[in-house]
Image (cartoon, rainbow over all chains, first blue to last red; front, side, top):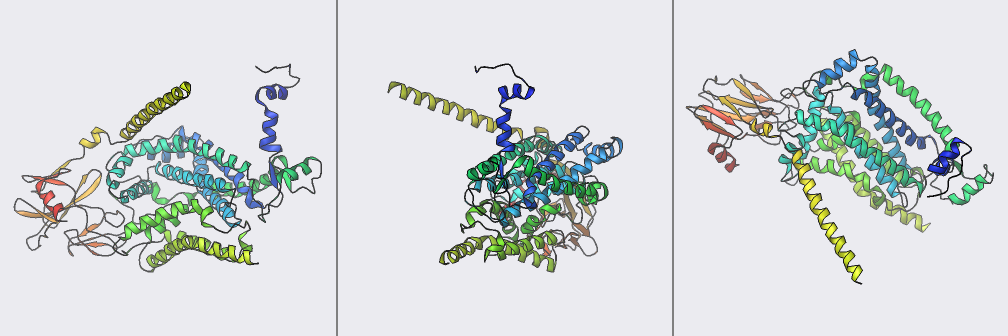
Length: 416
Length: 166
């Protein structure tokens, strides 16, 4: 065992046992952040905060929620909303938080795409981030089912039904996932387990991994500039704070994050107190009924784009049914972002506005996703169906053309 | 050298034990998620169809899904592979979930058609899709005929004949 001398202070006592001084250096005071980054880089900290809020509000909801088909609806809409003091507050924080966390994830994700932060050296940051996105999607979906309202029930019904599209094992797989021939008590209890234990555990692990994956390649910056972190940090430590291109995460950078957090929290609690209904569908205040489908089913806003990609294919092409085409497109849409570091074949790391072709690609993608989101909520009939089809097709074409566009861009840059 | 091979052997032996344990655990986990025996045994529904009125839709619940049973009137023609004779009458038996997105269509007795309110899909009384987005006719649940009762969930010879044609 190492030698322990009598500590002069509490800090020293802990430092001898846990190395807290070094830990604080690596994690905070000597974790270097570039100076030239804007508020869009504060989204990571916002997400960490939102996740914490969801975890805490979730724990409070968990104390009164009952995962049983006969009790779930009332435990949410009566016990938590009416009886538990401030139960409504925790529910609204949880519901609004679940919706807003996706808004911030999307901003975080498209900031990464805009600035090319997924490129060589940063692939693991991107992949772990996309893994987090998938886990959050599973978490959001499994949680959406728990209040056992009509929309919850039919969302669970339709989403589990999607697995029926997998060749050969589809039908059996659906029964296996549901634990019954329809969405029933077994489905509710296992989704409850996923929502409160398994997926949150996986998310915690993935968050740690996501942060870790940042340590070696370091965070990107507004210009995609490369610099020597060691030399720059030495400059900073030697006292040349002005000349150094980096600042420590704590306390210098975090002060900016805290400001963004403050602005965000005003917006967040404005929603929680005055506009919580946007995160709650009125249909979900009817108790689940397996024998009565609501006239129009749609997911929460953050899944609308991929829902529309699934739904946009309403006729058969080359003998493949519209349903199967939709499923294939849906599968494509859900994995294609993961491999974007390899689809983008231009080695230059620059913000989109400084890239001759990519800038159009990026903004067309943004518009396309907005169209998909907008039409995902409308009934898929008449002209809507054609707009949906066009936008779904555009989505596929955009990603299939990305390697060619970026290759052309790389050639053009090479000629200069 | 002797030690090296011993270590290799221990490594392989450990790997084999771990693989067997891993597969066994996966099987256990898979089976834990299987529907319970009580769920499986509740997968049957029996309906006595003799008392039904012609052209009036009867809905029974089978495996949590609505099943349409429609007794044909004298002037309604039975369709090959879609209608079934129980006693002296023909009936249509099908799962009442629109094959488009799973809504429950309503039956319009005067027009003799099923109409799905969600996206306007229409079906003939036999459940054949005649208009709108549904990709295929309404599904037929497995059934068995026992006198004048229908046993849903069991594959009888009539059902097998129907699916053999499709």
